[in-house]
Length: 213
Image (cartoon, rainbow, N blue to C red; front, side, top):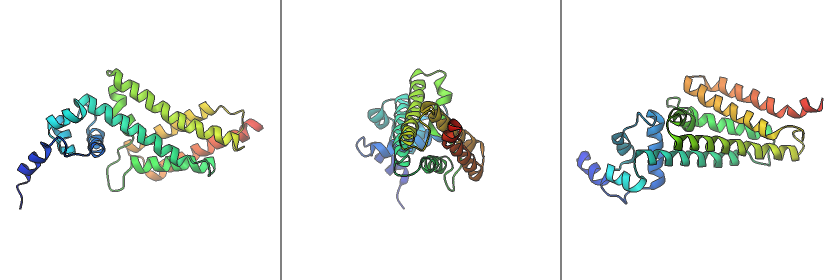
């Protein structure tokens, strides 16, 4: 049986013995669980397997580390959305893929409901932290743009009326995503949330029929 305390301390003391993306992923999980204010440096150290000097050397202070986790989350989220919002499938199917992927993230199998990392942690801090507020706004706009790009393609393909306001429909699509995030954290079931998403998809994709009446 090894001396886990000593070996862990030695491992954390090696500044190069870490994978930056893994460390950010583990830090994200820690912040996701406790929020920014409720997550201590000791918790982050345990989560990443790095001692404080190593954390500071790699990511700066706690605030800088948190901002890095937000950037990573938004970037990954936008990439996942572009993948789900493929041009070779109908808009309704593409939108539902986004919402299903989101629900898999917000309601992990065998784990506690956690909602959206950006909304769940950044909204609270944004009131007093300009850097967090900026990233929150940029992140939400990034999601809007991903939806809008796919909706405009649907207009080009004839799935939606060209008279529909793509920017407004994109914000509606984002609003559904935000609702899923909040309600999943509050304990709504996966089935009820998926039904809500499906109704939202029908609402968006019905824009053509409403405008052509």
